[in-house]
Image 1: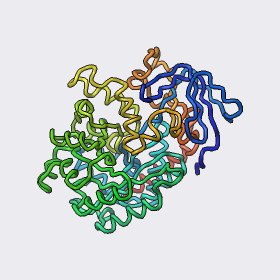
Image 2: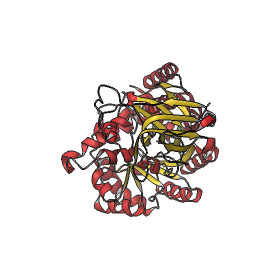
Image 3: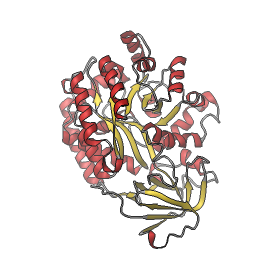
Length: 449
């Protein structure tokens, strides 16, 4: 289990991409981490005996840890087992039966696999939606490996095609969610936080959604759900509730800065206005939206209008990886044919993966940039590979367009190294992989016809 940070650390001679208000990039600079927070940033820092460990990062970029605004750790075991389907069929025929077959051990295996991959690819935090049951196992995994997690169990008290293992009453859904919140929210130095996670309109009754809206505000926690991902889904929602997704959520009190909505591909002009005026956060998941043939969200237009948009990988079965470098490059390129070559500059995309990701977790005051006083969630990227060479003075373009997750050399979360020289320190990769294969084999065999 990862303990609170007790090793002060000095990173020396790196190119520091601060993502601070001025978006400063400091070449040949140092970052001093003390007591889990960033204590000093500058060139030629003299910290005397305060630094118990020094790490030379010459030729590398020191940047804020990448942050996923939407993932499903419960689904990572099912990577490569749900290809070639659209959203609703994908859920009913593959994902929901797979999730229903989880037990606590397989859920832990899926979470371990998730966080191992996230850390190796430079991510330090994520907003996660679980399945209906066994969410303690996800928090336990994040606790033990040192990952920063905001998440919650999926809430599903309605809908067609639900397997028995995912069916729950409104009362049970609320009760278990509150119990998880009381066990985990704010624990381990506030590294673990709870978020209510009603799955989407078609799997949640109106009484459930109204209670979530009330409880989230009462308890001061986030709401994380899906909205307007697929055109067929949007049609069914209109038939069921007489409104579009975001408009319906707004009518129930489920918009605002404490709400993160994944996807938002099919939005009306009125829904875009509601998102802007309420400060609701949108998570763009380009790989997932393409693989499930859901469409392409109008992200540049949303951001130009003042909507906060972050990035996420979604689940491994609809991606099929959890690599935010892939999502950054795709987000940077995908929209240019429609909005022009300047529509998604590298800085904007990097903001989505750091500052806006922090906002999606409600942690913009704590992480997302390298600034004195903020939590020390730091990723170091080695840009000396052939595929990045030559690196221009503007390293942001290199990070977004050329760098790969395999270039990540070090990851620090809450001041504690969890990846050093590309090697995981809090998880054993071979053990994680073997355990994942064993549990995945059992579930796939059990569920497949």
